[in-house]
Amino acid sequence: MRIVFLGTSAAVSSNKRDNTSLLIDDVLIDCPGNVFGKMIKAGYDPLKLRTIIITHRHVDHSYGLPSLLEMLRLSGKKEPLKICINEDFFFEMRQILSVYGLIREDFPLEMAPIRVDGCVLFEDSLRIETFAVKHSVPNFGLKFSTSSANVVYTSDTEPCEEVIEQAKNADLLIHEATCAEAVTGRKEGHSCVGDVARIAKQAGVKNLCLVHLGLELEEHLCELTRTAEEIFNGRIIVPEDLDRVIV
Image 1 (cartoon, rainbow, N blue to C red):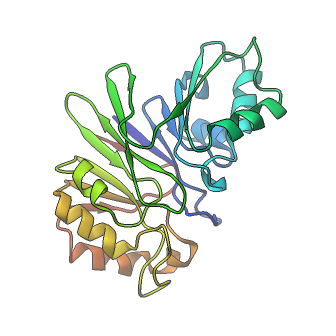
Image 2: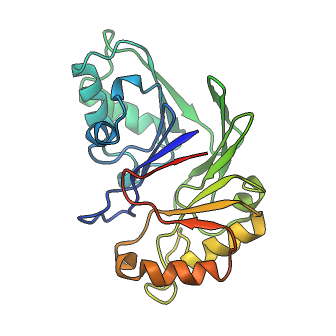
């Protein structure tokens, strides 16, 4: 699996980080900002994109979808594009796309509502499974599996047992880290860096990536990473935008 971190920030972006979005092989996870342009910067042809998954209704995870689809249409994409949207937000997003004139016969979209728990998708040899997480609105994490690797992405969540269960012995856990107790205090619906390190330890994962980083954490990342390393003995990665990991 090839994972490209198109964005790594929480809801408020910075001059270094855009809102969190991942490209895993030919699957896009969430769609803020200029995802089309960032895919090009990462060396990926956007026309190869096959599936888009929107985890939940919050603005920083979905507001770029109409723009991405229009850019793909204008660039000549003809192959059907799967768009899998949290069932809590499916109707509203379909209406938004309709307002922009993106539901049309000459641009085939295969749109489907996705349950927050137990929904299984396949993209060639890649198995994708949803599981419920604990956020302020209905939300799901994602488990990506091939014959040789397992990767778990939490999306936005407070610490929860479901993540530990799904991430057991995973090759890579990509966990949100919006806050840090010593810097911001706790935030409802989100996890602190120390929480994430403890979850990674309990799950026995090999590698940990911190994403959805709060703006206030930027100046403290080295210190926070060292603190996390005192809890979790595996490799900890704090990716920059456009960084990539091969699993």
